[in-house]
Image 1 (cartoon, one colour):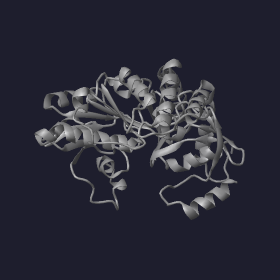
Image 2: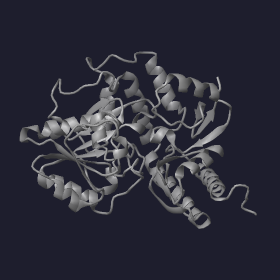
Image 3: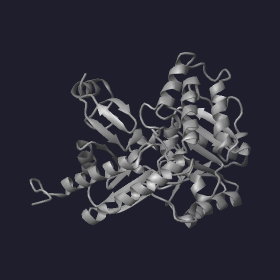
Image 4: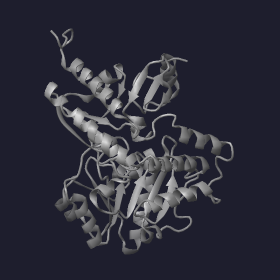
Length: 403
């Protein structure tokens, strides 16, 4: 099968929910993917911050194969040994006390929403404050919490009970709190919103407000968690502890799994029958996640992400001198944005044509979220390709840089 055949079959049989790039991959190794025609790409998308160990990592592959040969799924009607061990690892390495497992980031956020409402129900509290340009998922409640109107169109009426305030504005957030407020739900760093970072003191102020008003602080770490920012959890970068934290993406290294971690006093609001997931934390998913987290710990990948991410940012910033369309480079660990004064989509295409995968999260924002295992050599290669792509996009047709 070739790429054209895959494209034709997809167009004929799949729903039109994605605007896909014209490439189909056949294999991957480390930080590289190979398409069906044999062309190799340096992967700085990592399945949207998912493949944190890269592709075909031996520890992950071996763990999945061994577990698949024993038992894949039994459901949560029964005790699951690997799920219990994964829960133990996450709780021992976080600020929380209890874990719940599901299948995706959106499901994790739905769970957190339900948990906060159940916790606030005795006091008649149900409203959750969220920030503009947030992204929490595409199921209906998670979509209602996603304060980007472009995602809402055609799906109204959305579930009520969500109040939107400006991002990084503590005064606006405080003024939005009412007797009906049960929780504040934020991404510590906004991913799909354009890799926006909080000002010093903002998240600490949010934590104080929650303590003062008896509110649940939910941090959506779907994209920022599992070492992406240079610490295992991004909240560690800001010196605070959430009441609830949601995880997915990198947790399974490519195998679908989501998790909700919560402080004991919040987690106790859930009783048997209040929530559930048929597939959540099954043997295969939990085994994969255990392989990922133990590799993260053994190979000290958060620390590596901090070092190599700083190197990546240092290598990217000089591009603004040779390419005036580059207006800003910002990032933390291996969560990096390149802000442009032109349409980012054309740069994405130009990079892909030259063998580098990046993506655009806003019209003028490139996102680089490579596997946490990248090397300085990988960074140097990516920056060279991006340099060439920017030159090609910025030059008029038929004109070379030497003309």
